[in-house]
Image 1: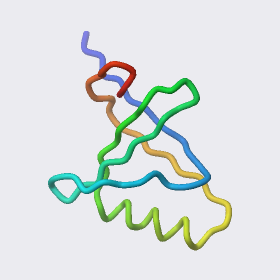
Image 2: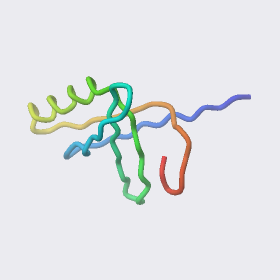
Image 3: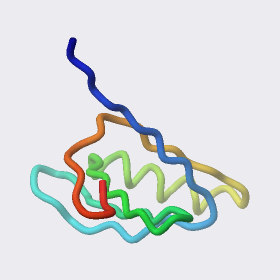
Image 4: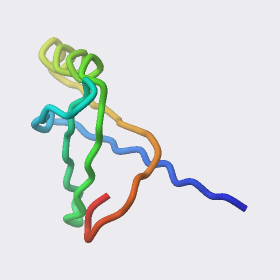
Length: 76
């Protein structure tokens, strides 16, 4: 049997800082309440839409979901 993990990260307040990544992607990091750091790679176009939405709406929330990659010490 093959098992694949998927994860959804929900956030609100302010967007994390995005760093440029290869292949028209951006890398963002989230730290949860337990100090675990999650790193996500997103399409730059999707990230630009998120930035636009946060500037247009006073109250907002977002979610990122996808396959869980390899784990590192206290990082995903």
